[in-house]
Length: 109
Ligand code: FES
Image (cartoon, rainbow, N blue to C red):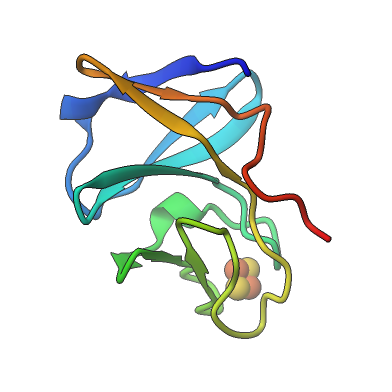
């Protein structure tokens, strides 16, 4: 596992995604419901940045066509997206948010 620093915990506003690049991988870091999640920032339906969407009920919504992805599993809750978006392990160390963007938690089957 290769955890790298994504941002400070204090940089994250509740339910406001923050886009970061981790070794070339665009990642959206989200603080919601008392936890911090990391999800690939690109929608699985088209090349749209998920961090520009809204967060609700532990899901991030793609602003273009409205598919919402579960921040815990990356799975879409509805069409038009049918494929999950990779989600990554997160560690909090002090005030640092660490993400391993090389090791998605769930592999697409
Ligand atoms: S581009 Fe995200 S749902 Fe279509």
